[in-house]
Every structure is written in structure tokens, then in C-alpha cells.
Length: 331
Image 1: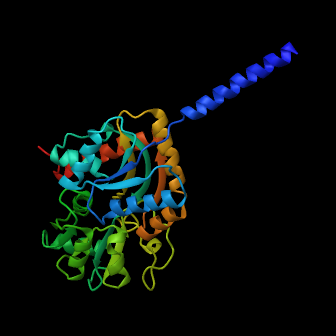
Image 2 (image 1 turned 90 degrees about the horizontal axis):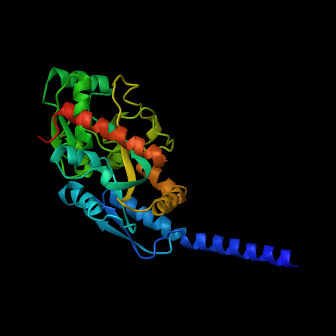
Image 3 (image 1 turned 45 degrees about the horizontal axis):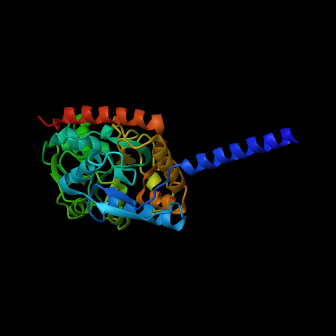
């Protein structure tokens, strides 16, 4: 009887220990801020709203979320907000390649290492677009014509020394050409200017040109990725995103995609980071997220942990090299 009583006591202690361990597992206990380093209606804002919907619809959090738009200084406001919030596990940011480009081009006192990586949840594609009435049906024909008239071909973009400007500069080096780069306020404005023939081309994301592509006003010459987009549903009468050839298929020795990453402030605990990694593993499996990827023609990925750190180190070095070659680094 004494032995049985002892075993029962040990069992009770073990059960209490398990209960205590479970109780210690971290989870948010107040509303979570989703920091968007961009303006209202942009790609990051749209992603944040979709994340909110997925979380609420599938009951993935016990606390509410609030989107905070901090797009001042080309997104620097949002990045510096994260830097100024060490150990705050009740906010995360939806970051893009500006985590490198802003510090490199403006000397913003910020590094992605000032945050805690959680996961890369998608990659943005970039496409070389021309007006549908253009005589150029391939990248080779477009570049050959641009080469004959240096500087006269106007390339529309969404901001000086940002992603599409970096691609434009790389395309210049790859093709031995020179464009007149014109930065606009948004991808939508760049698309409108191309339709109006105020530019010869732009390097918009698929979602920024989808309306004009569907309307037959622009043509997609190639996508700057190692592989074609996986989406086979027709967007135009005849073409799906997956029908656009890669630029490498078309003889351009360059590719580029832009990360969509989730970061916490620096100094959070491993348990807090693990909570958010698990949360986003669930989010990317929701129908809402998958529908969002296809609607935006984003590349679906999930990279976390040591693999994410390795990716960021390599991606940062790539951006520094590209921006150095283009003369975009702040002096």
C-alpha cells in the first residue's frame, strides 16, 4: 500500500509539473500591433488586412489585432518604430526589401538585425511590361531598340533606389542599355503612364498591372524569377500568369524577387518567437492566404529559423552589391 501511495504521489507531482510547463507557454495577453511600413491600400496594407481576416475567421488568436500604418520616410518610420520597441512581443512588422535598401541608400540607422526574424511568407515577382501597341514583343527586341537610342527609353517605376529601380539598373548593365528612369508615387500611377504611352516600359509587380493586362492595354515580356509563376487560371483572354516566360528564358542573365517577411522587435524570448512562427505556419495554410497569393500572383514560401537568417544575410549582400553597382549607396 505504501508503494502504491508513493507512486500516486509521484504521478501527482509529474502531472503538476506538466500542468505548470503548459501554463508557462507564452501567448499574447493584450492586443497585437501589425506594423505596416507603407501607406493605406498598398501591398503591405492589403497583406495585413488579409492576415487579420484569416486570424479572426479561424480563431488563431485570443487577442485582437490592430493595423498601424507607418509609411513615413519611405517606410523608415515603421522600421525605426520596431527598433525603438525592444522586447515588445505584442507587435510585428510586415517587412520587404526596404530593410536593406533604405539603410543603404539613406544611411538610416537601422539593420534587419535590429529585429527578430519570424518567417518569410511570400516573395514578390517583378515583370517587364510594355504597352500592347508597342512593336517590341520580346525583351531582346526591346533592349536592342533601347541600345540604339540611349536614354530615350523611359522606364516607369515606384520610387528612386527602390526595388524596380534596382532591377532597371541591373537590366541596363545586363543589356548594355541606358533608360530614363521616372519614379512615380505608386505602381498604379506607373501602370497608367504606360497605358498613356508616357513611358516605354515599367517593372511593376503582377498585381499592379493586372487590370491593364486584363484589359489588353499592356503586354508582359518576362518575369524576373528563376521559374515561371505557378498560376494557370487565365487572366487575359488567352494568358495566365504561368504563361509569362522568365527573363532568363529570354536571354536576360538576371533574376530578382522581393521578400515579404514577418519580424518581431529585438530581444523577445525564444518562446515568444516560437509562438509567432507557429501562428504564421497556420496562417499560410488558410484558404484566405492561398487565395491572396494567387490574386496577387505572389510566390508562396515559408522560411523560418536558421534558414531565414541565412537567407537574409545572403539577400542583404545581394542588395548591397546591386546598389553599389548602380551607384545607389549613400556616400
